[in-house]
Image (cartoon, rainbow, N blue to C red; front, side):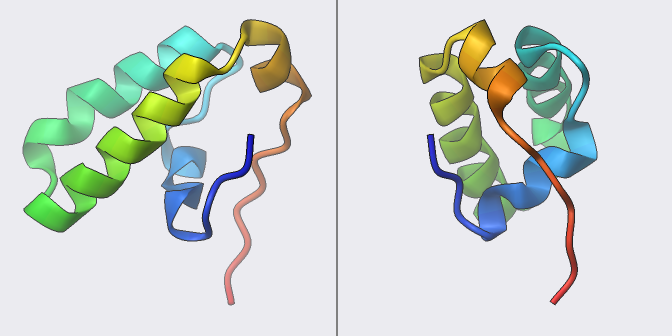
Length: 65
């Protein structure tokens, strides 16, 4: 699964578990503006399509430009 640079917001909510990461992002949705909420929902949808094994094998590294 490929995530866009913008979807790297996952690094802010990443835990050791895919389901917990999704839960943390869902909890933060009400505090996000419309654009960020759309981005988060897109990222959540991708995470929901992944298996736990895929998530465990994925590297989520936060890097600045």
